[in-house]
Image (cartoon, rainbow, N blue to C red; front, side, top):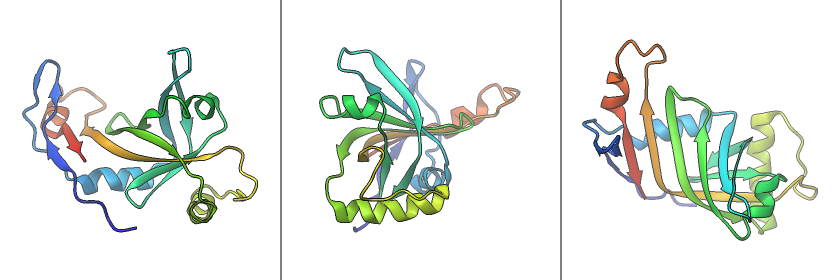
Length: 165
């Protein structure tokens, strides 16, 4: 798959005003998406209640790919809007997009190899524990923050970024 165009980076609106930050490069976010082991997804149940859970996944070809057999798998066919978050609150990346079911077996095969390598797993593309989904971000947010708080939010305020695709 060809690389997607570079998203537009800008300072986001945070806490009721426009952040006064220098946007982070998209490469900063993709490096963290590739390296992460655990990701959190946020979906909406059929009755409108939220559902969040950690999942394993891979960042590949400008998209996040994951498999789940959880409540999310039951909700996504009718409510495909999703957020994907890294575990880190110090180097935060949040994706917003739509989860699309991966139905092409050849594509599933290409996803299982990097997934198995990353997690030292032996997932069989013909016997998946749950369906695979693709999430291409529409918008993403990222920032860095000082875990101690001693900088009074300076690192966050100078790095908060919104990427639009």
